[in-house]
Image (cartoon, rainbow over all chains, first blue to last red; front, side, top):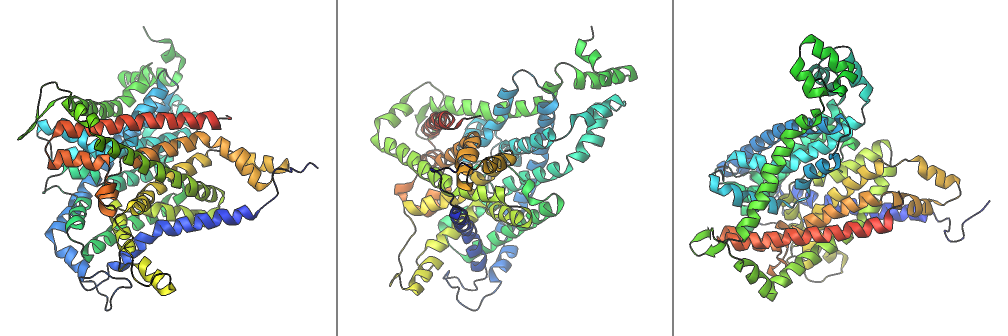
Amino acid sequence: MKVSLVWPRWDGYVFCLRLVGGLTLAFLLAPIVIVFITSFTAGHYIAFPPKLPLGLTWYEEFFASERYFGAFLNSLLVGALTMLLSLALGLTAALGYTHRRFKGRTAVYYLILSPFLMPAIILGISLLLSLGSFGLQGSYLVLVLAHSLWAAPLVFLIMVAVLQGMDPALRDAAMNLGAGPVRTFFEVTLPMARAGVISSALLAFVVSFHEFAMALFLTSPSTQTLPVVIWTSLRFEVRPVIAAVDSIMIGMVMLTLLVIAKLIGIEKIRIG
Amino acid sequence: MVPAETIARSGGEARTLQGGWIRARLWTGRHAQWWLLLPMLAFVIGFFLLPLLGMLTISFYQSAPGRVYVPQFSADSYVRFLADPWYWGLLWRTIWLALVVTAICLAVGYPLSYWIWRARGASKALLMGTVLVPLFTNLIARLYGWQIILSKSGPLNFALGELGVLDKPVLFNYNFGAVVVGLTHIALPYFVLILVSVLEGLDRSLIEVARNLGAGRLRSLVEVVLPLSAPGLATATAITFAWGMGAYAEPLILGSPREWTMSVEAERQILAGFDWPFGATIAFVLVASMLVLIFLLIKAFTRKGAVR
């Protein structure tokens, strides 16, 4: 048996790998845990460890505050509309892309993904500068379009992966048996791709719900989303109410993740 | 004339006979895929490419005090940018920040992704969940968390004080290191998720084959998995770098004015200074240099890695 001399049989690297991985995971969770703990501070002063007694003062303030709660509702609305638009655009495009091989397919793929690679701040600036003259600035519509620039390619990416994993023979069989393309889609393709559709829809919502840089450029005071309001608060005052708001958003995300995990398994979520 | 392709597909013919002619043509015709792709392509062109072109146009307009711009051709903004060494320094600081963050993501993100890829069942779901929670958490919330952690009365100072490393609190905030920490925290989950998706596409049995042929675990990683994942690694790196160069909130919340980036300056010119042509110029220089650097990055990766 030939044993490599250059490559020692050293399995200790597995330990190193997990050490680096574990520390990285701790790094990823640290600020979220800290924000969550801070949100239960009762006083005005943020300190660590938090000064006792703890309380829900800042949660009460959030629900009582028109500014925060109104922004929260704005975020939900924009997120839901972004989800619908991205799903419609991404799903039809994914169907077209996986339909068959055709000329220019690769170019189409990169064209659709190109907005996703662009930093949010650039998208926000270019939309503000171009659409500003149409009087659209500050409307929900512009923000939904802007967020869909990120969310729709994401839906497309996930749905292409899902559709390519399906057996095209089933689709063709349905068509051969006389079902039209629309019926084939709703009765064969869609049920099989259900998990992918749900998870990509949730992802689209989450992308919009947390997006901040585009919203900074494209909202007016009445359409401001929650991240924008938190941002302005954070730059001019640091109060634990922000921690409470953040914790509520984090809670919603955990819930979404649990739903995805229950429906299709968490490891199905992917980008790229 | 019925195109040959329509006849060849019996499904389409069946529809034709039943009378749903237009629908059948849309699906089985030669251009079927284009009908389905049309809305998305129109959306990307209309709300991504055209606004970018619009931004480029405005960058060549004249700045005027009291107005956002005067629609008259002028290269003044570019002259102003290129002639001022401060803006060159700004561009370099922006690139440097993105490079440092990308390098850190590569160093710690690859081991983590590999671990997640090899994991199975519940531990895999747990690992993925831990990466997904920050990914789905509001960017501002995460930066706020870091602001608390790095502050004088924060947990880091508390821990180091209890351990006896520090005898009085140190401010870890508002410097380059803090910005790197914040930006890495934002970029890393995306990096890992992309990389895991790419690794999932690899054939696991390749590792088994390498191991059976006598390669150690480490060697199978370095000589089999790494080269095979190079194209995906290039994508993940390119996205991380692009977003790193677009960094806006991180330098503002965790940095001092010395760490402010091109994005911060562009935003200040547009929203605070109302100088749209100059703001657009900064944004366009940022996009152009980003595209050039990503092109070079991907070239470097594919030259070294591709053993496909």
